[in-house]
Length: 383
Image (cartoon, rainbow, N blue to C red):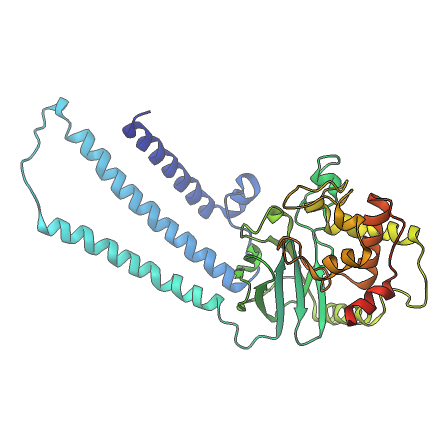
């Protein structure tokens, strides 16, 4: 393919995309239902404004495209050699050059004003009713309601069988979590974003929010949901091999339901995650640890524990899971200084979960015979 034909193909595709976008702007409901070319319906006033400005700019682009391509095709048709037209012999025209420079500048400035206003509005978190800190991890989100004292982690809830193609995928495939963010309708929510390891991005299209989460920095964005419902998004930065597996789910509820949810979370947080006076059997710990492992470890170490060496070492027969149990606990609790891909799970998992997953790795995947009680994890944290 020569350069000329390749350029022509690119122009055809570009023009086609613009026409389809114009049709989606003209009939958003139809486009969303049949072709899915329109935006996710906005449930915030700011989101509706953003979509309105986008549609206005799209019409401006369509008008410019019609004018430019119309002039080009008219010139080709009416001034071709086959009809006897002879090319004019001139070098430059200062007036035309000024016109075709000034007009685009004016158009760009006119479009920049509303776009800049909306951009600044999305960053205006003043007067917020609720502040939530969202921390990105590989590969989950941690949330902290700074005023209410509620903390939890939000992990992908899609069953592994769907990911592996064993069972049929649901309509919320890869967009469902075990612990969604819950906020009251009609309240301004401030989201503070940061990350524990690499750059993530907290994005929910229906709320018209997208903010990068950068390690060592706190950035913020705000929204006010006007409609009760469940709204879904995903991390929109390439944060690693499980990038597509860290969704965001926001449930917008009434003020009464929100207060009930907060009280339930506080009650659960205040209750012990295990019975400190009970000595758990290895069978109980292994059964619980398999669930913890499947929810948190299979992404890197695989279901059967063979891992993906050298970045993700094997659990099955590996020196960590078959070596000293103290070393095993240390690396799961605090992470690895040699391999930054091994995160510190101490801040993420409970004492019961840590004891259970260690028992599963040492006695479910391997056959070591030794295990720890949750109380041992509690003691190790205080050392």
